Image 1 (cartoon, one colour):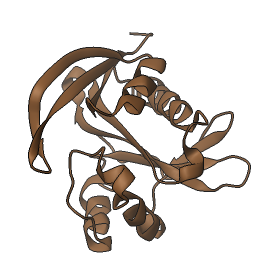
Image 2 (tube, one colour; image 1 turned 60 degrees about the vertical axis):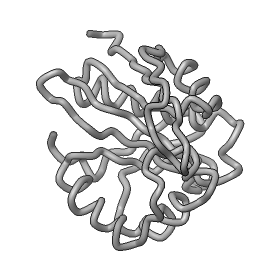
Image 3 (cartoon, one colour; image 1 turned 90 degrees about the horizontal axis):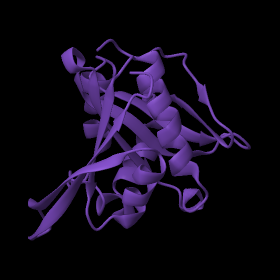
Amino acid sequence: MEPMNKDIVIRGQQIYLRPITVEDTEMVVRWRNMPVVVKNFIYRKPVSCEDHENWLKNKVFKGLVHQFIVCRNEDQLPMGSVYLQNFEEEHRKAESGIYLGEAQAYGKGIGTEAIHLMAGYAFETLGMHKLAARVLAYNTASRRLHEKTGYVQEAYLKDELFLDGQYEDLVMFGAINPRG
């Protein structure tokens, strides 16, 4: 996959998505290390600024990940991030992910709108046929969010991951491009 256009801004009703930058590092590291975010991630190790900068250099800037910062329209306040990774160009598939790092983003439809905008980008701009999402089974908010945005549960994997000393179930979701 080619690196994403650094000038792209995807506008919605209450938010917009802008490409992640090196200047976002401290904010993103703060979000990724918040207990409320970590508990819903498969990758649980603490993230340092150096780790994040390596992620940008080796994944985002090479086009292996397309990552955006979710910002409120009203005041440009960054609220979280959405991304596409694990591209399978031959099959026109990718995996989507989201995390919100600001408490004022919860319960306001920001996650739902961010997933809609990211799916539109994946389907219309990148020409993806299918998006996948992995959600820990106990994360009912994320499961509802994906269902509201057109994802369908495709698999329920029992004891799939060993996290924090116990096995956890994983739910696989998929969304198909409505235009083929």
